[in-house]
Image (cartoon, rainbow over all chains, first blue to last red; front, side, top):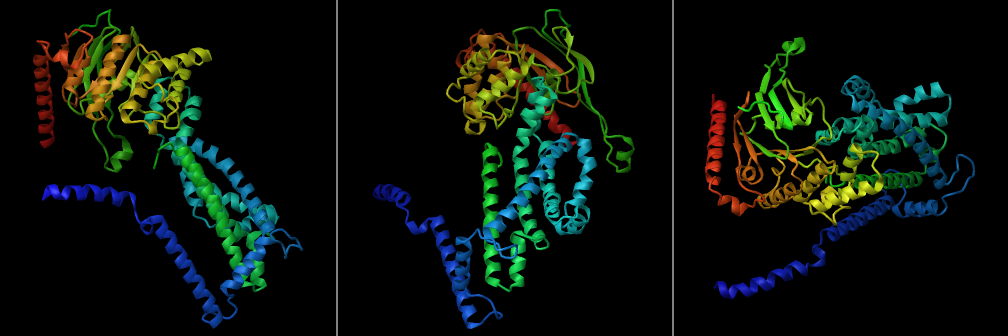
Length: 282
Length: 282
């Protein structure tokens, strides 16, 4: 029995390992499901819009895609602030985010390191951070307009004030929770305080700092669209403007582009996180 | 008991370590007070130059506390530890430390981990001399070819080799090892014990090693310090290990004193561990 079964078992097993049927591959199946659901969604949308399942004025899927293609193939035209190519609006939004976000990071990272190094500072400043962190970014808008008297600067101010907290918190936490063994190594070698901070504490906290920067970037991108609805230009204003034009298709195009850019920005930081991890938290 | 001799390199004199309990008005109000805890009491050991000393004792007997006081990482409550007649008050590069969980900087390569140590201790060393020291020590622990690897790309045994190389690269007077092979599997542990024996024959540095393993202590040490259980752990007995060097596993087992020493250590550890368990039940 056992002898006669053995050859079958040995030849059968490797075959099953190497010649895996292609439809069993997990990624392929996921892709198939994705495409299937997308097709079904577009089909329902198209049929629904034509037959009139939704409220009046909802564009069809094909009309929206056509509209999308038009915006993407003519990104840079300028017929005044109310008729600006999507590329210009995107660049305006990205520029505001970049300035506010970089300013916030320049404050948050060094401040977070200082707070994280001293347990007293950590406890003393924690109440401020915890109190200001949950405040909605838009709550700062009137204050910004009053203080700065300038819509452009107010937009940047809102990005700054709302994207500072995640980086600050993560940096302080990362610095405060550096593995004690690393500090013991630096201590037994007699490393100076400054050398310990730059060669040990900051690199050890870098994964936390980067994930803080990643969350902050996500928040900046969320906030800019909301803030721009109340300002003059940018993707947020574009949506608001198209709402006034009652062009639902263009609003959908803008939503898709905002999502896509957010995804790209986030992936950038995901790559950066992997780059500094060195086998940690993986 | 030993009396402090002038020939000793490291002299531990009546050292006591007490961890202060929680007192004060805050803790009293919250009902979180606790009593002072004496980990080790009145320990005196004298260690001559070029001696390999193992410290063995039941879990929680304060072995690691004693080692971190020698390293200067933990303050001494009473008594003093003299290194070449000078009291130890802080960590310093005259003592090299090997950590149980390696404590390598994950963002540094093998070479950079060694460079960090050497550069910290000898900042004014010429680049050529520094490179030579690093290369020699990587070679000493048999890691040539792995210089540019990061710790997460190495096995546990290889990581501890880096830990040992880093501790030796700063040319300390004394090497302190805190259960250096505790986190390794039995086979790797054996390999590394042989390595340590080989390296010790080459350099004959004073070593103080904490261990749980009787065989390890017998293979490597000249003297074995057996500690009683905590709290208020003391030195129970110091054994002289007479085996000739160079040693290896097979030949020392044939030495007439081997089995008596082993039996004595086993009965000591057995007695103390039983007593620890009995104390827990009360």
